[in-house]
Length: 109
Image (tube, rainbow, N blue to C red; front, side, top):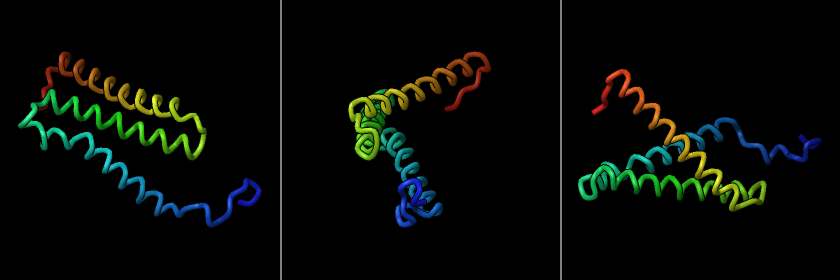
């Protein structure tokens, strides 16, 4: 690995990488879902959706910040790109679900 400038110590084990990926994936999923059971009875589902969107944007901004610091250095661009891609994917998924609901008359309650 020295030919690419990496030492053996710099490389993590695949198992450790998988564990970290799984933990942060779980945290990310809980972050999006948590406002509904925790705040839904107080601020309603629409309010919980807004809180969830804000939490996703915050988490993606932090992720973009860390990515930019460790790599590209274009902090604002990376943060905005992370937020836009994440919320764009969520909007696309919601749109596809709404269309499927209209066409197939499937409701998840």
